[in-house]
Image (cartoon, rainbow over all chains, first blue to last red; front, side):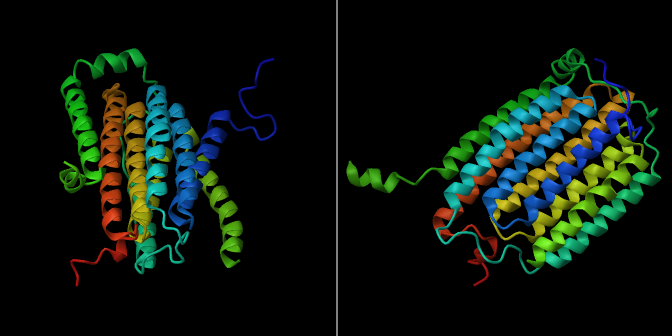
Length: 182
Length: 129
């Protein structure tokens, strides 16, 4: 059975409705990340936010970026954040005061930033023809490994350096202890 | 209790308003809708970074901001034909750099936590005393 091109009763195309649902999920989860008291729940809301963003990448015509988003953000970075939360949680539980004293100015600044950005976006001609293109993965691979091969290699070295640095920073200082043992 | 009531009122208003904005801007077929979405997500991340007390919450807010920038890059890449596949390539590189940043940032937070026994940034005041 064929699915109709628009939603039967409302007469809206599926794309728009799906986009609005994904965008609403993403923004709501983002708001929960910055406002909830229990930080573990903040981490879980962050995973929801990244998942909805992966859906938006698919709608924007970048399926490989969506796959990488699921792998890197939901699979790796969220788990890393959750582990860090478990390592740094104090036994007294969630703190009573979630926000700093500068929360109200920060909220005002955020609202002003949104207004300025929306006005700027509305007033600018971006030069596209208004058509949404699809990024073919074969093209992406060709560009990535020909024009962008030097940044690609540099990012590899950067990741290696970051992993070694992270291990070095987070490991316990054992030099004194081993000196005593030997 | 007040928080729950305010949330219950604000959330549907927020979603309906967002839906109207999205449909008015042409829904999923216009670049502006993606850019506005990216701007709002960036502002949420900025608010979280400035307002939260917990260092890990601040790192999560930075991740939100990086994702907002990535969304803008991907949107530009798919709506402006001159860029070709470059937008997606830059988005992938940004993701790799974000992973490196998360690794180093979280290990710094863990190292500080081991010294000061608290993840709250407003208690890191050794330089002020």
